[in-house]
Length: 332
Image 1 (tube, rainbow, N blue to C red):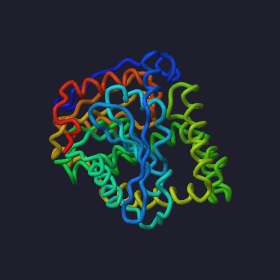
Image 2 (cartoon, rainbow, N blue to C red; image 1 turned 135 degrees about the vertical axis):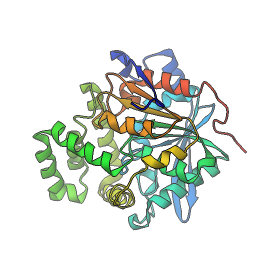
Image 3 (tube, rainbow, N blue to C red; image 1 turned 60 degrees about the horizontal axis):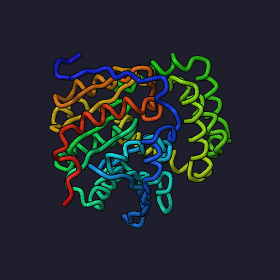
Image 4 (cartoon, rainbow, N blue to C red; image 1 turned 90 degrees about the horizontal axis):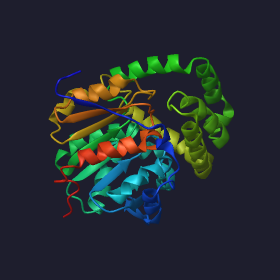
């Protein structure tokens, strides 16, 4: 491990994945009102959701063919101390209307994120990316370093083509016989047409090795099933086509590698890995090693959806990052 990386192990209690209404603090979160709005950009309306008070955090969902709904309600636990700004990225979720998949690129996603920041009158902002959202967060920060005050990279996706290849090798071993079944599903006409039930069956297999506890796994699958039903066949196919476009701009590029560039970033970076993530721990480690400002936290007994599986440990780490609250989401 690079000596520049501050490494800590956060314990995740077995009861950390209790329902959102389990404590008085959680009930307080339930009492907060989420404000929904739309941001028009070039003939497209981005769906926005804002909740909480305090330093502003723009939350970037993963996928990249998902929307923000799989993060809720657990991510909202942070809203008692932070102002969370969610949005469905262009062509996904409630931001899919009037979007042509071929018009979505990494550049348009970065421009949309900058438009969200500007819309909320934030000179600088904290970005919290989950999974694929960490790639978008890094790509944005490298292009707009003066507008980012902190980065939270939660369960990060590979930031290089080499790490993607490493993940694929590990993934094949973890999937075992389920890999062939998943391939069969993805080759079926129902999956190609975007049938929500068939798509859910695929992701049930895909995320089977990604979470530690069965109850969290079932909750995630149920949540994604609901999202696929809302999307419908057309929405699923559009989001899938958007994902293909974004892959061609990143992981499919010859020599794609953000890691050497990360030394340019001068802002504090919290890298939240997990010991039961289906992404190998080296992926989070490589990101953290690439910046002298990174703090790597490995959550124990936790998988790829740490906000769901280990919310208490996540909260401790986020609060520690904000112990120095200067430059955290400054308004104009």
